[in-house]
Image (tube, rainbow, N blue to C red):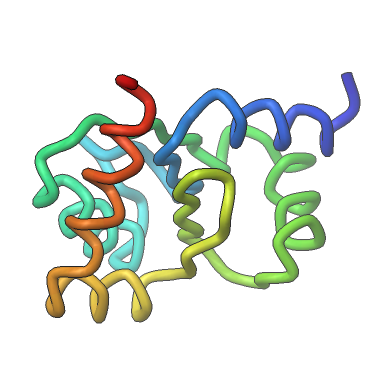
Length: 108
């Protein structure tokens, strides 16, 4: 499986997934930390990929998403954005709605 197929597979299998530096329990940068805290505040399960573990994935995802920085949050296979966008969505309540909608869709 090539790296783009791996990315597509991860996005198809996980309704909410964050590509981040580190893990939710041990983020390796402030942006990843703030983004994952906002995501955890939604109260739903989500998947994560530590991009520091895979250089090939880290570089390929920048091209795949046309988004040069991390973290990158995807909901239902669509790029939501990075830290600033996620925090704005969290403050407005939209993030919780999006995450809960994706979680409910998976359970259906």
